[in-house]
Length: 338
Ligand code: PEP
Ligand code: MN
Image (cartoon, rainbow, N blue to C red; front, side):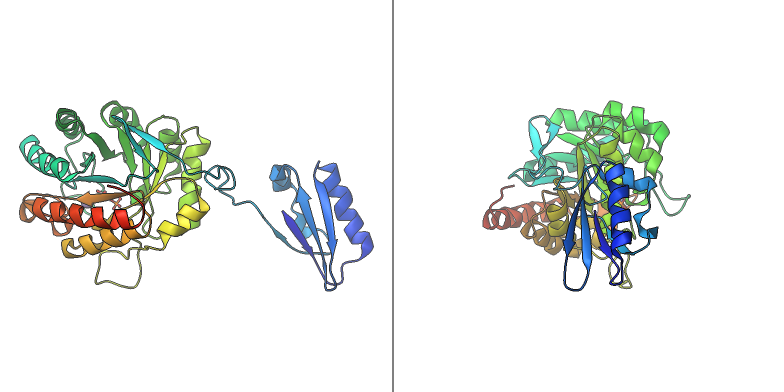
């Protein structure tokens, strides 16, 4: 914490502040400049939460040095986190993890067909929603537990890891029972009870960025999960709301290097929900790998025109296969592999 004093701060005011912070167990480091004086504080800053230094006479402003998302920050953990996804897969290292599959689990035959295709193209994680956050209550809401069973069954037969969304605190034990990775959707990024609940498990959690959330808010949400004891968090940029309406959302590609700078957690990109258009998914995937993401979450459907959700943004398996070839070249160019 740094206290910047007013130009006209008196010695008496400075002494008063120094005396108070010392009493709180902090060590003040005074730096007198030509223009003004600043006091740096060393020690556990938590005590300052109940002592608003801003109101002390002579104080102009108080600036935190450490990020408010402590556990998530690189200051707390300088080396990048490697997260074990199960079946020998790790995210956060050299390998870019590709998670692919339909938006929703619709039926077993279809999931089989899509899963076999994405697996043979090189995807290691199978996605598929069983609880779907739909804008309309009349749209397909997912198959619930039946969907979770199908997802688990298909993935284990193919030796894949699964990711699926959990929307409600009451469903966490059920989803934990079937899935390898829990997904917190964009709409629930600030559902703090849900964040605490998944934080009380040990499962890897993909935390999607909220529709209109800043990077700081997103990292604070991750902090909820880590502070509840679960350090296995993967951040997912999936586009944000802007004035641009050509695309479903606007992919904030700069979030990738920013998050890598600020946090030790892996970051993945979902180009499907970011764009809403399958034709834009390949270019955005390539850009994400070039920007340094640790993984991709891509919607693939073998009959997009019949998909119960998000057909318009789903890649056909053939196009997904081609994309994987393109991504291999890009990952090599940036010192990664797929
Ligand atoms: C999804 O991945 O199916 C989904 C609903 O994503 P988002 O929460 O990013 O909209
Ligand atoms: Mn979807």
